[in-house]
Amino acid sequence: MQEQRNILIKKYLEQHSLVESNILSFNDFIRNKMQQIVSELNENINAEEELEIKLGKIRIESPNIIEADGSTSIVTPSIARLRSLTYSAPVFVELTIKYGNQTDSAEVEIGRIPIMVKSSACNTYNMSKEELLENYMDPLDPGGYFIVNGNERVMVMNEDLAANQPFIEEGRLGLTLKIFSQRGSYRIPTTISETKEGILEVTFSRLKNIPAIVLLKVLGMTKEAEIAKNIDYENDCLIVNMYEFANLQSSDDAIDYIAEKAGIQGTKKEIVTRVKQRVDSFLLPHIGVGKNARLEKAVTLCKLLRLYLKAKEDKKLRTDKDHYANKRVKLSGDLMADLFRVNLGIFVRDIQYSLQKVAKRKKFYSIKTLAKSTLFSHRIESAIATGSWIGERSGVTQNMDKANYLAMLSQLQRVSSTLPGEQENFMARTLHPTHYGRFCPTESPEGTEIGLRKNLAILSKISTAITFD
Image (cartoon, rainbow, N blue to C red; front, side, top):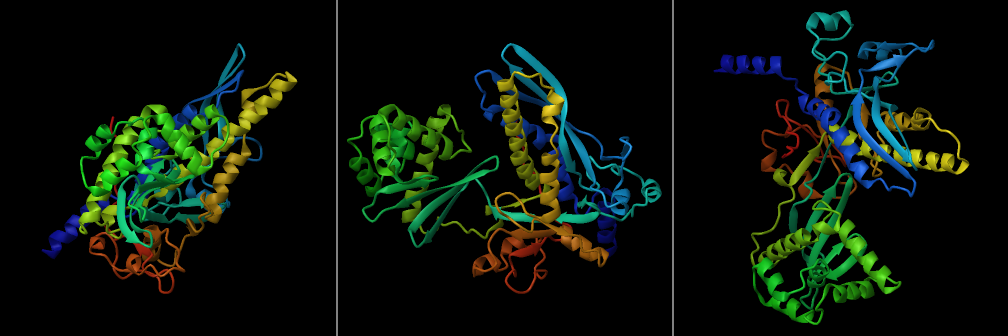
């Protein structure tokens, strides 16, 4: 029996890396996520009166270095280590600028991004044992790390509550339903709670304690019969809420109520625009951020209200936040996508600013000169070198521990929680039955980080998100 198990493990290890979850995630970032981010950004670029910027196809070359004489040579991880270089590759994107009647298009280099060793973009990818030895690489090196200025940096996986799904819990505010609505790098919590008078309220972003029925009327669900039909769970609490706001007959009446409650001032037209803009942009943005998504948001809000009303009467409908079905692990590809999205946005704004200056002076411009940005490369390189990430997070990357092979594997399998170590959080630190087979039950640091910093089981794998066509 033991022999068969050893044979199976040997076969598995011949076909898979022990740290392949991170490598597959980075591959997904290179192949799919980068282009998705460019497409997302295209939709959100604010077109000026005469100026229009469009980003097209993105591609990434093999890792290389520009020598002192200006020539370009291919680099391997071992050369990057010996020469204290950053193992990175140039990123090119198609850029089209429309100015008045003039259209200019070119493929420009926007900067460089560090490449993960043994990923599909790495120069050692698919090399045989002999080829690796020829290039001074250890054939047993699992990869899954970056090389920045000759230092090997490991990206620590991040554990957080799952986005876009409801959490029902009892706290100091009584019973609350919370959903972390995520769209791109934005994560906006939406909370449903109940006042002492029995009024159901919704809180999100800059709109606090807005009655749920009023919000549904702003979204276009103005008839009580339609609201009751979509909530599909009748009890005294719902009847009280319906009766309380029965005088708000139209969407405009509901907008006036919210404007008064939130202290939004201006002309009638400005008030309507501001309220609608806040509701469209910040209420459940994962559904959509345009006016076309309003009805779907109203239906979703009704479903969440039904769940909340049921949970009031059934104590079994409480969410176990520590159950691993309610958590997600952010891998290297997800963390790099957050960094890339923010820096690409800054890069586009820089181009817009440069073009506006050129347009005012009515001077000739070259796309390649405008788009050349050393800041893009520097920001990404600096984040990986220091571990300081967007969202004011720190310690996302660490220097690689190469005391022995197992220490290296252990660090590459590390998962860190977003909860602060100074707080007690007893339940979050406790071993949960859903950790079985997924996490090592004993490997966790002593002190404030105990239970918050875990390690994946050696043979565990993390699946990447599935996209439906």
